[in-house]
Amino acid sequence: MKTTVEITDALLDEARRAAEKDSTTVRALIEEGLRLVLKSRRKGGRFRLRQGAFGGKGLHPDIKEGDWEEIRRRLYEGRGA
Image (cartoon, rainbow, N blue to C red; front, side):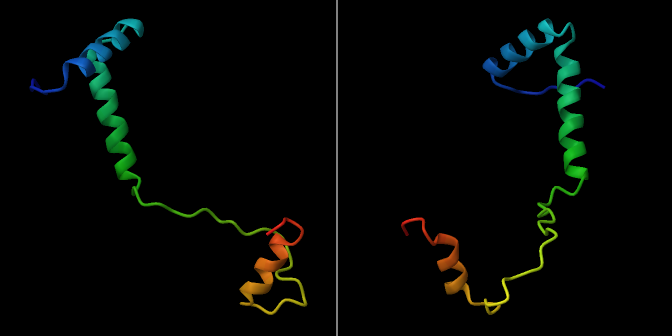
């Protein structure tokens, strides 16, 4: 199917150089780019925080859970803060 796409001259020039370097066409680059964008959007596109847990045993026994002041104090202990 034919269509018209308006892009900046600079971007088209860069695409032409890249296509020539890779022995391909601007059309092929555009199609590849569209496929990559559409594929990444199909994957959900939502940020997912990776699992950051590790095999430790939790907080040190003498730190009460939720005592952020004590945790912060120990983190910066001996660091001049």
